[in-house]
Image 1 (tube, rainbow, N blue to C red):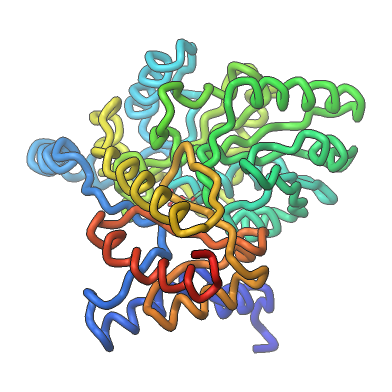
Image 2: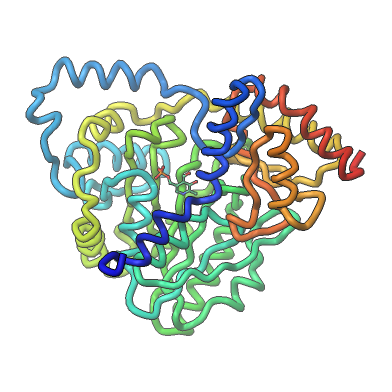
Length: 398
Ligand code: PLP
């Protein structure tokens, strides 16, 4: 033990609460059967990848020279793949990116780690809006930075600009946002992104250095309003976009994602070099080659995401009807209701006693709430409703 990294031992020993809840659900399923347990712990897409993904992977396996298909690509990803992905972004967002704006990596996690390592200098702070994806703390601290949590507005989980302004200081290197959001489902509208851009521009001037914006967007396509989320670099040139195919194409196990670095970013070539350096230092070179090629051939194609809206509507309506207080999510596939007692862990324990598996909001930096991942089969929601109702009665909500 003395010769090991204490930090890594601690990270590897203390399982995330999400993983712990999932493991508990698995254990209960083994004991009492899958039809008795409703597991809302993980954000694992419940809809399959589109048929085109299977066909494309099959065609690549059948047709492409296996040495080229399975061989190393350049560290930042195959040039033709990056060109195809840049062209797709240009089509969708009216931009003019080229292949050298993209660094392909393993999912959004790899993208975030590369972006943070590329930016972080000793003493740097990274601000994020809480509640937030718990791995942000691990990723920021691994890069040598400090994560500063800025609470969102509690009523709708939108950015609290007064709190953000108060938290920005000369040590702030970047603000890390996630819209559509895990765990709240909040989507930041164009006006909020523009206000954020204006604030970061002013503060960069005031503190005499660039404050970057890292936009973590694995849920970009999972939105329920008619207006798609705004393209963040349009509002703020110093934005790094982290994307993944985990949710939109239901491919979390294939570990494909990228960092998009617009040419408008200050010190563009140097920052791109730093991204490549971060990928090298972390060993995140050459994202999985088969799925690089799949992604390039499947641009503009997404899983059938309609089931998530159906699940959101049925669960939200039912929970509100039982007396739970819950903001309406506009994207992603999570609900983040208030717990009827302030101790979310105690509420989750009562739910667990009914084999209803939820994750306390404390894991996301926001007590008094619970996260419900509704990327599940609709039948599972229907089965869970009597259990939510039982809890509501227990707490006198109805
Ligand atoms: N960022 C957020 C907000 C997420 O919810 C997730 C995964 O659930 C990730 C990043 C990591 O995504 P990936 O599986 O593509 O690495």
